[in-house]
Image (cartoon, rainbow, N blue to C red; front, side):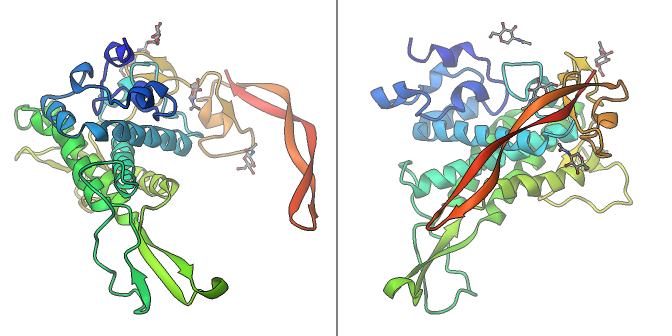
Length: 351
Ligand SMILES: *[C@@H]1O[C@H](CO)[C@@H](O)[C@H](O)[C@H]1NC(C)=O
Ligand SMILES: *[C@@H]1O[C@H](CO)[C@@H](O)[C@H](O)[C@H]1NC(C)=O
Ligand SMILES: *[C@@H]1O[C@H](CO)[C@@H](O)[C@H](O)[C@H]1NC(C)=O
Ligand SMILES: *[C@@H]1O[C@H](CO)[C@@H](O)[C@H](O)[C@H]1NC(C)=O
């Protein structure tokens, strides 16, 4: 069956297995051939509300998947030099079981994925791919110079934000855990972190302009709203990860700071309720892959240094060939020609 891949997967998170749906139509040519989207009843793991939204907005689904994929890729980039590198032992979803613990890392994955969904949907609107939205209709910024035109087709971050809020949070809102329970705390944590991610994507969108006029004189400018480069969103949320607030469930059934001396988190901040495992050893319960076999940097004193990365277990040293472009020369006009150099370098791998 065409979509048997979809039904076989278990969908633990938003509703999608990142591995199947987070493929673009180009990687799944059958989507183009029959012009179809996977039908909602064939997707397992949707919450009830998400299934309804899926039916109403079928053309959004592949973009949600694309957004989630973008989130994972960015997560893996941001954490490439950390013990936890955004991969887990559970391969039914990329984040797998690590997110069962309400850790900082879970907070980051929820926020970056929600941001990815805002991003993908907003862009799809602008590109005319969705039937329910189009170019951004946000108001002209006050500080835009008067003779610049406003109204090129912009990324519809307003729609992207609202849709992601409906869809991503749907499964959290449907839960009915007793107030004050651990599960309720986790639900509140997820909602907060989803929102922080959406706001990052929304708030970092900015004005972009293009010049017109006689031979590039730029006497005329057209401007529109444009999403930030997703790397910026990743860096922003990584800072939020570093400053995430430790929370616990309070007597009124709301999250409160563990240490009241800190400032209360705003809706842009990440929060967590469980301390993180150290991610040193493989542990199928926590979803930690461990750091055995990871590359490390012998001279760095940071998290990528061999001491910290290998958790004091030591490392093996290898020699390996490194290929790079070198002796580059500029040729008139206009290209650069390089040679390929090979050198023998040391590499360090955790025991
Ligand atoms: C990953 O998936 C493959 C095939 O789907 C399965 O055979 C394997 O056991 C899985 N690995 C883990 C660690 O779950
Ligand atoms: C895995 O982690 C859990 C929770 O931290 C811990 O109780 C358990 O002992 C660990 N298992 C192994 C094999 O280290
Ligand atoms: C993350 O680390 C594991 C080993 O701990 C490794 O197998 C995997 O390739 C790494 N993933 C990425 C994206 O670097
Ligand atoms: C290792 O760390 C040092 C110090 O932080 C840095 O200067 C160097 O470029 C790193 N090496 C590699 C291969 O990343």
